[in-house]
Image (cartoon, rainbow, N blue to C red; front, side):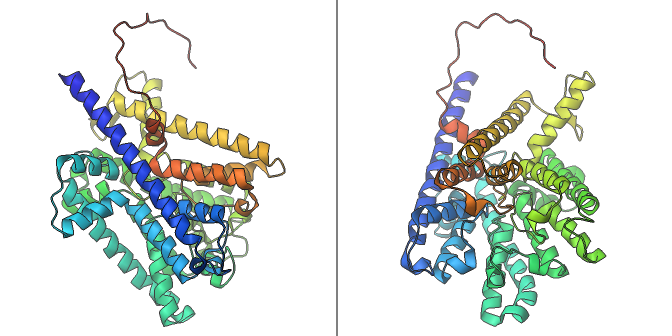
Length: 452
């Protein structure tokens, strides 16, 4: 009875995963078609591949671009990109369910199960309530961020453009989208012009972190306030890991970039640059310092951060903080010859370890394969730059050292696939093609091998 229930649950999950994958694909195609319209391009004509690349990058909240967002797209095109970022960040099923709630439509058990998979929550109970909190909370946070950014953007760009820029960048930052409109100053400059602006830096950093910790953590914090002991184990791991990565990253960038990317800056600018550089690789994609100017050490740190990414059930990508922590503590348990993996007074299941291992291996494998293919197709490109671009794509980060526009057609298609895979999650992407699970009536004899 239990085995039959488990099989049905796995089948339902695969069905939901395919639904989500199909939904994102349709949204990407619709966005690409809209971006090819003459009304969307300042040049008056659209390139289908560039439009598809941009639509994928926006929907998968990545931020890699083959054309400067402000200089290439009209207001209509920019609004299409903004809508794709919002839908991609919150998830189309989440937004659809919220609209159903507003229209007072009944949400059945099957729809609730799909929502559970979409928002990556631990249980089906209360999933509709969580969806309402997600959408309403996101709009409030983005609104507050826009108001704070307007204090800086309105004096610089004027009232109408300042308000528009504030909304665009608040949504892009919260959804970890990485798209910007600072091409009004200089093409592909991101937030470099604000490297010493405390308000812009702290607001964008906060939006990135809040968007990247996950909706389950939001709900947990709202319910239990500052009582850390009452938090779910998931929330404890996410919050602790996020703080440690942010602090460690800031310190490391201060050390490695002091005489490199931060050379000539004031102490305040160096601190803001280090903090921003520590947070943005967690799949945000903005940069307040020229990424290409980072030292080799800084680029390695950035690539590690991009691979880790944000947290499950959030607007972020990557292998996720929880996967890294689980494998790290699994290794520690093995070294100490302990059977159980314990965190915060709780024991992790073997299933969690297997899933974390699969996620990391699949992401690493896709990264290696994609890098090899692109290097084979374009051998004149620098290996480190290609690896950086691939990690940025699969981690849905959007940071680049400047080679995105140099990629040929096939290389761009590879990056498009990586961004799509990164948004769905590497394990979910693999499940789409998985065969039906079968239980063997006869198991093979077991034999030991030497490992390590």
